[in-house]
Amino acid sequence: MLETLSYTSVAGSQPNRGITVYALSTCGFCKRALAYLNAKGFAYRYVYVDLLPLETKDEIKRILKERYKENMAFPFAVVDGEKHLVGFIEADWARVLGA
Image (cartoon, rainbow, N blue to C red; front, top):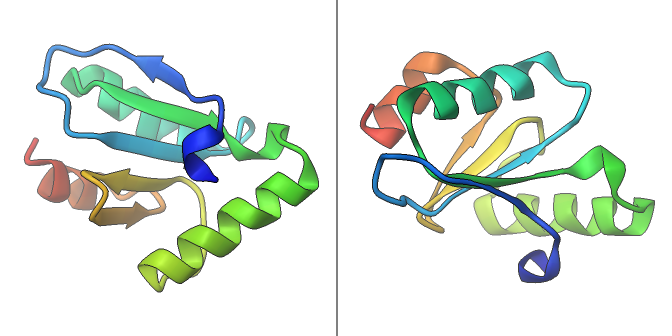
């Protein structure tokens, strides 16, 4: 189901790490996370979950919680399909992304 979402792709100078960000269009932490990825030159894709239909939004939250055993909070980033980040704490993002 996650594969069928309409993501927005952002090109970057860093090698593609398979970064997917689930964000809210009105979330300050989400905006900072996307700005961080841009500043560091990472290629990534994102989707604003709050702009999707309620059923889709609920399904995304259910899948991510089940797959990563983590309560859903935004931004929620998946790196290389394995690692994940919840919320935006710059030090954590730098550690996981190797920035």
